Length: 358
Image (cartoon, rainbow, N blue to C red):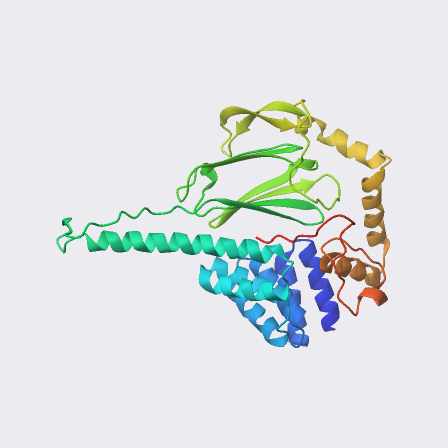
């Protein structure tokens, strides 16, 4: 019973239905509270829903059941980080790094903790210096001891990305940004972003994407702690990198803000020099896709979709479990083979698997 609920929860998580996944993980825990992986996965769902205190508690439970659960340490660190407990987060990431020294994600998050701790310390020093030089009446006094000027450090805006089977998600970590502060331009092979946030310096970036995406099915979400740009993959490929190394042509693109106003004109690399009117050709594309004889990766992806749609419950469970636990590197239809054990990550030869978290 618990294993079936766990598999269904993983399937909902892969499909980005985090609320449904959380409910199923909870039912699995109620059925059997001795499985550390269930608590670690539920912690991940809590993180996606920005319920960081609950994520911390679940990660603690997973660690108590299995002190070598690397994912639990990683997710506890993320939960603490988002609660602005940077010192504690760094300690947890360091413990996880000792368990898996080859996982560079721990190093990245330790550096993030150090940056946040430095910013917080600088802000505290600035506040203390300001209070020390003010009299009770509010008038500034001349200190007999030369003071060292303290400059408030503005935390840098950081950019990260991760992917699912269907989407690539670019995450820009910036606090208190509003939709009016954001200018985005999403094209088939290019993403351009400009931000003028109140809490940090102005930020702009232009990315030439490694593979094509569908701008009409992509979206932008602004929340208090970050900006998420969700790009719909045109093909069900596992991206090995976000940006292309190819530097063929350049195309002039107008920056269009979220309010519909035109901004500056910039040039950046693109694989196409044509403008697309998606409203006019969307119907044609859909009709072409129905009749198109797919080849290569597209044909393979189409085959997988058909196998899943036509398969019984065990086939679907096996495909969802193997894909989720292997980070998209293994896809099995044999539940008897994968149902009773964890599916290991098996990246293609010459490639390194890296999992990114928001």
